Length: 432
Image 1 (cartoon, rainbow, N blue to C red):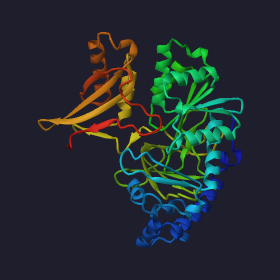
Image 2: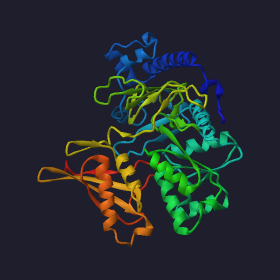
Image 3: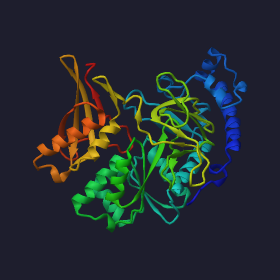
């Protein structure tokens, strides 16, 4: 059970907390001095960085939101001169103006080391051939996994530009890829394409998959492990924070270890902003404590998870977050009931014959909320009698979310999947 950086991943909690405080104070002084947004915030709230001498005292600082970052586009959140920025990337801008993100040489060095930790925790070594099917673009995913794998001296295949699923599978087979890095929904598409081509996963060399960029369930993990004959690991990151590498699973699969020597994590009540206790689900908030070009203080991610600070069987002392179960901005409110799209995914996985690819459309009829779910059929059932399956899927969804939804089936491959970028799953027509 490999641990890449034992000094920091197994650091005693008291020492880790002291390291966090030292790095936090340095970060607060840097943003106050170099970022106008934070300087105004601190002045307005009469915050003196030198008085923040504990993690608990950090709660005096207001949150940073995605809207704050958008208003500062492209360079106003940078804490170093542009001449010191060696790479610029950005969010996709799918849900609004994109966010420009900068990296210094040290930032890239830290990111590479953290991604080496992520891959090592999944038992990736220099003997592996790592196929990175995340996009290489302004999106951070492909670069993060690529850098970490090269740091481990593994062979890396940057296959995101390969185009078709068939070509991805050819690369996987011909180059004997042992590790697959992509979004879980894209991995499902690869599994389906394998079945359509009559290729058995035993003919491949895959043994490990690192998946991220979107929430996914334990049910989907089980499906991917069965259909691709690999061991699946969850990873977590945001472009705003760095990219992938903020947290990841070890072999225990008992939560994702947060790299706390680089990030301070909080869980808050999304409605009130009040801190929640370990084990309680709420919104994840992160403070970067080693970022030079793009430091963030108390950044609200919108991701819903819980925190666990108990010891892990792997020996790491880093706290763990649960798997992300949804987002504050994709929680659906309809007919007085709240649910997350991940609950729809679980329901679809319980019904043989449909894929976990779906869209939710919300509209009103005579003042009543109507929920319509478009689910994608598997190729095997695309031309079969679908009435019995429709009834089963409708029942599974009603049981999962507590309300009746109109269910419609779509042809295989017709619903977009994530290749790293955000895919819009909810179409809310009620405000139109």
